[in-house]
Length: 259
Image (cartoon, rainbow, N blue to C red; front, side, top):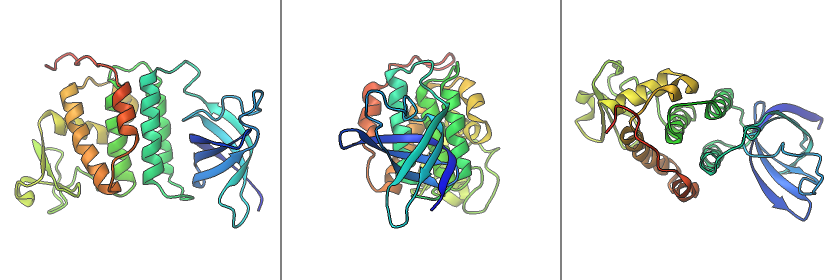
């Protein structure tokens, strides 16, 4: 088959033999692709820093029929989050986001909306933002659940299809369906007040604007607990990076206005 040329984000790399790496990419054209980068572990590798996590690259690869792994022919950096340096906390967030993408999305299935979500989130994380890192994780989780088809639009009641954006709160069923007070029977998780405002803002704003908005950390962590339960229910297990993310998360100050 011919060479394929596409934009891609590097998700993860694995050691293969002494000099090579197996690379997992999320490509714009083909979704998740696994490919071998020959010589990538050599001291003077031609790949340089192009295989760092969430580096956006111009990827050229060759996929043979009946072969699980493709072969990388070229990998040039388009945008790198590492150019300005990253903290250990940011690295932990990237590790977690990569695991979410790996677990939620099938191989070789393009998803332009998720590709754009990744790019917008990574750019926002590299900007001078007010919100803590955990708010960016919540934003990404909400949109990944929605775009991957596991949670419908929370702005519409799953029972009567009423508009929920003007309500004071919503009920979420065990399957993650948003419902009004009447359809829910008051069963499930209730998002009220600031928590529902947080979700509505996440659904309405691009990540850069959302992360400039001050958020009370109590609300951020409340939403996080709910989303973690939903993600575990979808995957039927806990993600490995939870412990890694918790260990490296800094003590984040409460945003002004919170308590």
